Length: 215
Image (cartoon, rainbow, N blue to C red; front, side):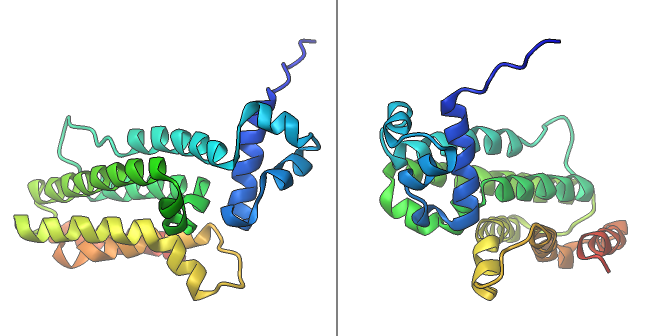
């Protein structure tokens, strides 16, 4: 029977750090805590990552790679309402996977120049993608909106999706945020554009809303 190769220490540090950051918040997790959790010496950890910022930047690079792929809306046809729901579902799953980045976002941006610059680019890409989704729904006749309204909606969609977990945490800070909050986040973003739906799009929105809100 073939033996599976042992995962490298660097990969385990990455995975352990991400889990601890997500669970306790990045400011509350030190390199000593990470080393203790892995039952390795701090020196072993520093051999792979010179400090905690280096770990954060490694995690952020992985996040950036995944979200850039997610934000790449297919160009073969105009996206419709179902495409938008699916996109938001995948996006919020990614937000949940790297939720410490969103929960501790302002603090991270103030301390890490690399994260600050690259996250700004991600926001700009997110707005372009949201614009493309809205334009697609207009093109297929599911939504009525002019250029200025689409611009405002795209910005609002990005604001809500970016700070949804922060809102959930502030709303009940003593209660762990559950992944069920993601479904509510998807709904809240779609609710921004729902008033401008027309035809069958409105009925489809209500049907999908029932699934996401468990009604």
